[in-house]
Length: 521
Image 1 (cartoon, helix red, strand yellow):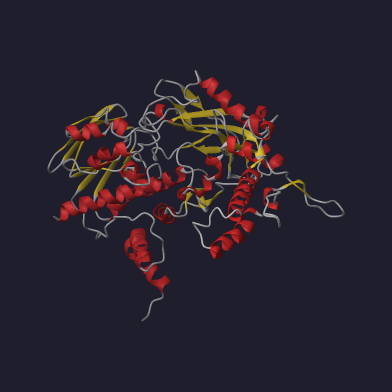
Image 2: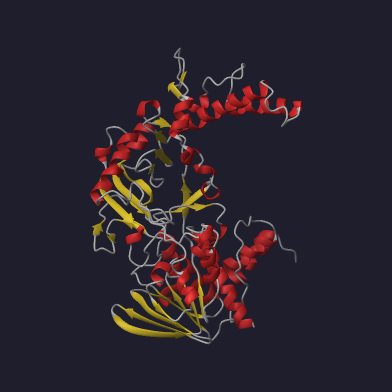
């Protein structure tokens, strides 16, 4: 009996679930592998009789329990919050946003509006995360991460009036192509390129910048029209090119190159109804494995067991396990009693916790009706430097728009950003509204019911993520990659996809692989 590849993969999925099917597809060369998983293929009774306590029901903790349970381990997740997901958190009607300083906000948006306070998109190259969504039955939809109809605004450009992103992108390309063509014509590149390659480059630049027959940039249909194409005798009129000196002064490099970042390139996805649908999908599968309102008080790790003291709804409890996978944020671990080595305790403060914020408003969808903007992000050179339009439920009466998503203080210097230095929450909301007004004059009054999430003030997080991208963090990364007795650390900060759910998945797989090796040895 012969098998097609499809049938073979389906049979592998029936036998070993997602991880077996996924590995089979990788082996057959049917999937790209931008992040290599270390998840071992374990038998269904590999962990029989072994108990694992997992600290934290974020994506890393949920994935750990999900995979270990398949291999026969007895798993318990202790989660301090009353919900799964950790930083995978969707704010919607009924959500309470509470800060460590006691500030409380209540969300009361209408018509199913929501926003993802944490992760809000899944790149198509984050295949492990996409695979889990498929296995758990979490429906996905396309997330429009970039739109050429979105706007860019700087006081030094176009008299301060916002322009379409397509104008900035294509006028910049046109001017660059013209300048490089002039350099070729003046033989300034003769020492770098052969005569033939100069000619080829000139031909390429003509198309790249949409230059005219003289090699000059005089505008392009790519940048759009001031008088639109129509029927009858009306002639379309192109946008007059923006001034190069103003484009350089405005410096829209963040917005122009946004979609070129490897993890922000199309195609992007989001889970229908909010990113937390993924966390709830895991939680539904795991059932009472996940224990909520369990605040860890102390971790005592040894050569053969781990003891965790915690309070469940205020009542002291204790749990002894053969292994522990600790996915608690390191800022929280730094405040939690433990018997880890001095080097490990030092490492808890060796990666800065990123102080990101997001501000979201409920509003009629003026960006769709007046500017034909459907998803994507507009950029400004201002205290609040971007406005992110919703992809969900397009054409509906209202939507939730994010006006502000950046840092409140710098990672390494701890210096406040201009936004972080604003004196009050009201001042920050005012800056958020002002950004919308600059992009969409006369529309900011339509914004209502703001929700401000400052991750540095969110209990049990104390930051958006531990940023390991700085060379100064290498020692802490290496130290936390080492187990402490029977305790293994996991989270996106122990991956090279920090800040992404995919990184949390890969780190969790890595922890499972090391537990398996320890048992096998």
